[in-house]
Length: 138
Ligand code: ATP
Image (cartoon, rainbow, N blue to C red; front, side):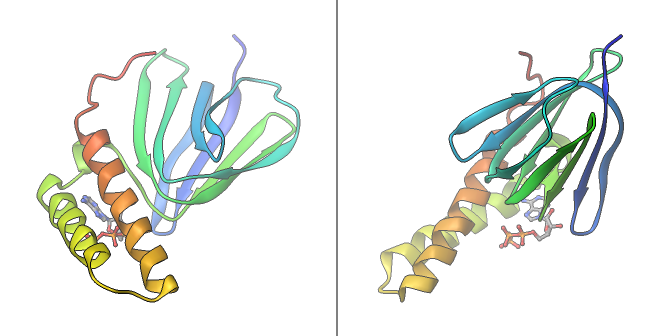
């Protein structure tokens, strides 16, 4: 069976550490698939949804925020600020964060505040999307 070593680390925990058959990440130019023996490279991770297929053909989904992936000699490390599975997402918290960000975006803001509100809105929307994807299949 062709697999690769995968470790997904967020700022407060290890989300996944084991062997995987496939990884799909939200990259700047869209969803990117990583298979065993991918060439070595570093790829940026955007706010969005990550999917991995483990050795038992079980798909695991996570809502992730920004970070990067390092692929090195069939070992893949994903380093992201946050990662939550659909079951872990607090929908009420994400809804409130979305409403807060939308309200901030209606106000006059500095460019930096505007970028932060936009990122906050993107995180909240990604979490709300992921919370509905408990049965994601490729
Ligand atoms: P909030 O404004 O609700 O704190 P945020 O986008 O600013 O949202 P982050 O800074 O991305 O939050 O995450 C801080 C921590 O809280 C991380 O550990 C993240 O996994 C967790 N977290 C944030 N929002 C949720 C949520 N809706 N459900 C579960 N965990 C969440």
